[in-house]
Length: 121
Image (cartoon, rainbow, N blue to C red; front, side, top):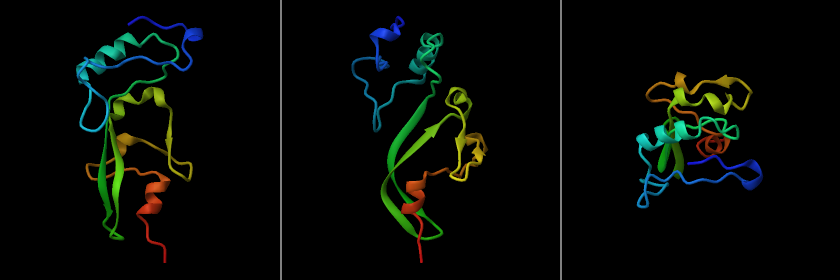
């Protein structure tokens, strides 16, 4: 892969496909090996602040406290050690959070998900 000069690429677009048969989306991911290759190939590109492997799926969710559910919510998993280039993650009150501090049964959800899974009396 060769770097694309900025003036030729607005927005920046490149293929991260491992081969012609793979796709990105539900149940289809490129391999960790391909991620490692991309990490090396893109390391010197100033336009890229961060690169992280991740998984994203749609799944039903339930708030066990309120018993409210959402039929399809996007759930995303990332490796906390690969997030250096992405800046801070903050709660709605501005408090900085670290994804690595999550326990095995913990999750962070966005404001919309919180509203969908909260009962207001």
